[in-house]
Length: 125
Image 1: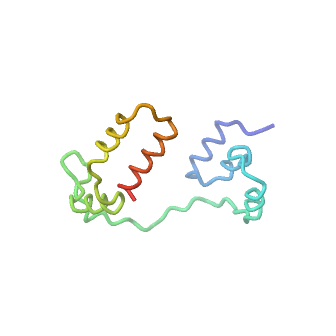
Image 2: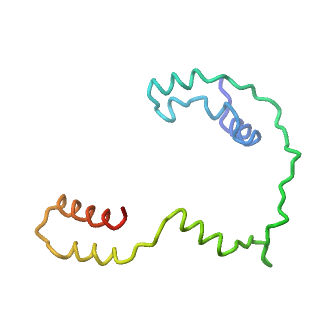
Image 3: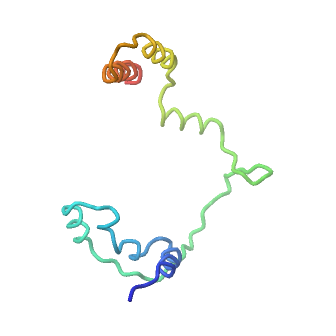
């Protein structure tokens, strides 16, 4: 006899996805190599204890919300995050690519891909 899926799912949700029931069949899910399976088998087994609620409350005093209850984020923070994540903006790349694609129709697909990758990488990198 096996545990029905619905009971397993309920138990996984109740424990906040910190349950060994998620990992019963890890070799079948990820189809890991033998090396990975050996490493996973060497990990210590953790007991499933009682769920403990944190008594530390988060401080939300500096968060501002609008009339609908949505968080309002300062524009400076958003711009700084964009710059850090994506870097400088790239302009004119679309024109270069369009010109390259329409320039010569007798190229093979491989030649076109090589030319496109050279053009794009020269601007980005």
